[in-house]
Amino acid sequence: MEHKLRFDGRTVIVTGAGGGLGRAYALAFAVRGANVVVNDLGGSRAGDGSSTAAADKVVDEIIRAGGKAVANYDSVDNGEKIVETAVKAFGRVDIVINNAGILRDKSFSRMTDQDWDLIQTVHVRGSYKVTKAAWNLFRKQKFGRVINTASAAGIYGNFGQANYSAAKLALVSFTETLAKEGVKDNIRANVIAPIAASRMTETIMPPDILASLKPDYVAPLVLYLCHESTEETGSLFEVGAGFIAKLRWERSKGALFKTDESFLPGSVIAKWPEITDFSQPQYPTSMTDTNFVSLIEQANALPSNP
Ligand code: NAD
Image (cartoon, rainbow, N blue to C red; front, side):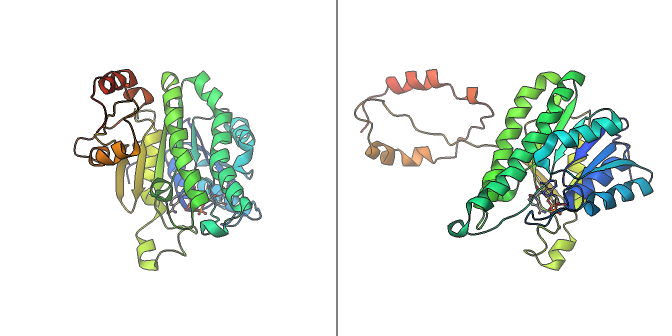
């Protein structure tokens, strides 16, 4: 096995590292020389309860293999305590992997406020709190790497996951903004939509499929994106089962309308084929990629809408 991509002297926080994907990342970073903070609240898949056992087990595994790791048992909602653990044990933080997660799947009609709020708290506020606590350290040292964890459910929507999909897509735009703000300080942020066998997926996929979906097959991309050599930032990747692909926004050709009293719902119907025509796509990556001044000029020059 090659261990060329090294992380010696770097400190990585992996949230939710007591099992599943987080554990795979923690072990992979440790074997390449990183100091690892193994954070895990140790609760159930739905976010009930807590235990120190999950994080302790992974720390033991790392130390027995000759690596460096400490445990942290706080909820990601207390991100500053997790960063404190890293600074106290290793003197710095270089990489934050926001991975901790829970599920409260229910059809939208049955979903309670509690199901909604808890999912937003763990996924969105948790990723915010840990990143926020590390951010100024990153800026001062002119180095930082952030990985956020989205989901295909967040990108495409999924039955029974209105709470989870909303939270997961929020992490895509959170990442896009972090990437834009961090670039001048050598902070890179990327977001992944993984697929892997874990306690989250073991009830929804058959055993033969789960066998091909090891969390270890997600770790290589995560490590690459966190290395000091990577330039990639603000990107979204689907990853799992040996497949890695980058996603981006695609905008249709679009339609222009004269903005006068002739602009009516019927005008929209008349140009619906143009609005939905992806044969000449654009791939905007920032708000300024849309030149509204030029669009207004072009629209003003049009005859009234039919
Ligand atoms: P997992 O349940 O094995 O791991 C999640 C870990 O997070 C658990 O060990 C849990 O104790 C911990 N955790 C939960 N709430 C926490 C909190 N408040 N503070 C600290 N730790 C907490 O599941 P996994 O499949 O490894 O999931 C990891 C991440 O990947 C999650 O964000 C999940 O939503 C995402 N994801 C996974 C898949 C997949 O196919 N497994 C697909 C899409 C997204």
